[in-house]
Image (cartoon, rainbow, N blue to C red; front, side, top):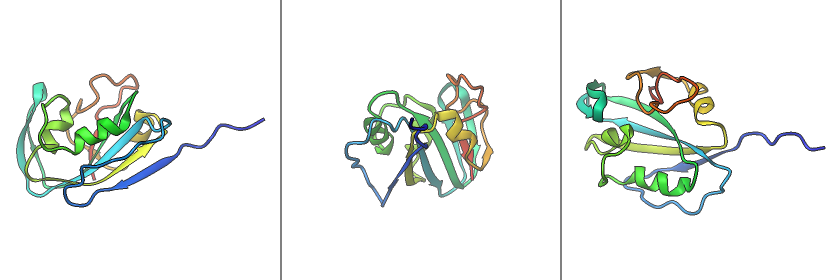
Length: 139
């Protein structure tokens, strides 16, 4: 009898304006976007409101039930309709994506396993069933 397969992670390194990602194994359902905000910025995040983000490194944890590659490709684009909280940060001219990790862990487990501190309660977690305070952390 085989045991449960351990969670897997796939790292996609980002270089400058990387916008291409190939086909991804369907077992990967969650992702983390590591990005750097060059300067402190006042950014309005949809209905959450306006927040002062310190310059520095951040990580956002998200998921996609289907086609994670398309979701990640969308996040990598600067030009897009602002739909998710993370869109408001990643379209900022001072935001630079450093790397993307894909994982088989659940979104909330991956988020809880990640170091950092919460900067905006509710960010990216409006539909969170595990009651995560936020899916965005400052590293």
